Structures are given as structure tokens and as C-alpha cells.
Length: 143
Image (cartoon, rainbow, N blue to C red):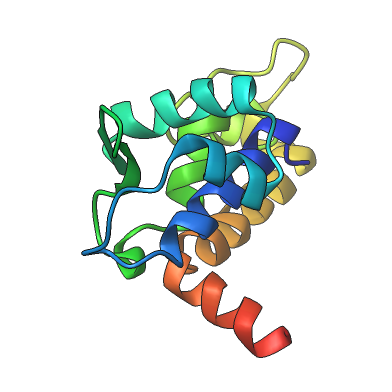
């Protein structure tokens, strides 16, 4: 299940994806209001997203945030991994943070591990295959 922090990050990034790339940076107060994210929480999230290279920030009176790459080059999976970490529901199937389960007798024959590997693969396929551009287009189509 997505944490509230991930939902906030996705909302903020989807809002930024709808802004003109060559326009003025979007102030944090506007992002917070439009994406319905508490400002203090948003500061921390935007710092993580900036550090990961998804957004650029500009200081000063006319400062704010904008996407660092085109919206079709940023996937929902990438954003969630920055905020949450691995997509895997159990550590024994994680591709980036593998750990054996402490209570597992035989990883090779574990039915839970095999099922969770399929869940991880399908989740990654969908999230990594959905860009901000795709998600905003779907928002527009649904409206």
C-alpha cells in the first residue's frame, strides 16, 4: 500500500508535469495548495525529489520548482522508489534491497516468495511503464 508520503509526492509531481517546461518555476505554496499537500511535509518531499534529480529548484522571489526532465521521461515507479524504497512487498524478492526472510525454511521452494516475485514484477511493469505524461493524459481523459 502506498504511504501518504508517496501519494503526496505523486500529486506534487503530477502537478509539476502539467506546468509549462519553459515557464517560470512554480512556487512551493502553489504546489502545496494545488496538490493538497501540507507545506512542511512538501518541503521534505521536494528535497528528496530534487536530490534524486527529478526536479530543479530556483531560489529567490521568483523561485520555485520545475521538472528536471520531460514528463514522459519520469515514471511513477521511479518516484515511488525514491520516496518508499523498493517496490517488493517482501525483502527476499527485492532487486535493490534483497534480504532473506528470517522465518523462511527454503527460499527456493517458498510459495509466498514466488507469488510476491510475480506481484513485484507486475507492479514494476505497470509503474515503470507509466510516465507523468501518461498519468496526466489519463487524468485529462477521465475528466
